[in-house]
Image (cartoon, rainbow, N blue to C red; front, side, top):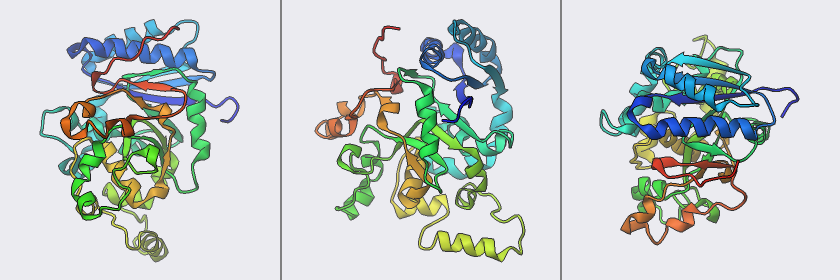
Length: 322
């Protein structure tokens, strides 16, 4: 991490009045990330009108001796408007029924941030607020400098058999595949988007991402060299979401992380794998299903010291002495 670099942290805070635990999650998230951090943090909060005042109160209360470098609030309705095209492409493949949890357009926000944020913002760390940091966010930010020359984002592995299930048909037809197998066994378990390291500059420049999210890939229609370069890069690999889903017989409804999981199969060079202990998921729901009881522990295992606890599916986070 470069000296004096400021960490740009983004979170979504919406519908705070509907769930009491959302308020506690936000406080614990903000307090923990500040107390463990050795670097300044600029916090961006995407929130709805009815949650903004309460969110500001909670974040203000969470700041003690250590404070955020700045806190900026963004209106969720204006951002959702800018996501319409991406949602129209992604949601038919990766959303549950309208009105359910993963049908919200904000579950595709990460795919449009490179256009939503100002051009001089180069990198952002996006995190769910049902997380508690026990490691220094500076170490996580330093993962940006481990990206290969083509990686556009960093993401940690899924620690449940979610994608063993989603790739069931493909795995049946390809019994020797590593797709859907546990990470600890050198498999490909898919990804969890609770934490994302987004290199916005590379996302803006990526012709492959542009194809997937329905953008014009050439600024100049006569730029045949650019077209040729893309054709060479994706030779034998698909560049539409529908064909990607079809190729891998994929069935799931977890929003952007479904797309990233498929993208990582087809274009592994575009994703940097963050160590699992920066997103130690605590949900054990899959382990309580009869079909997955025998395999769950193989997926759930994450060696090494926990850096971030993720209380996904409302899982309690262990009490930690401050």
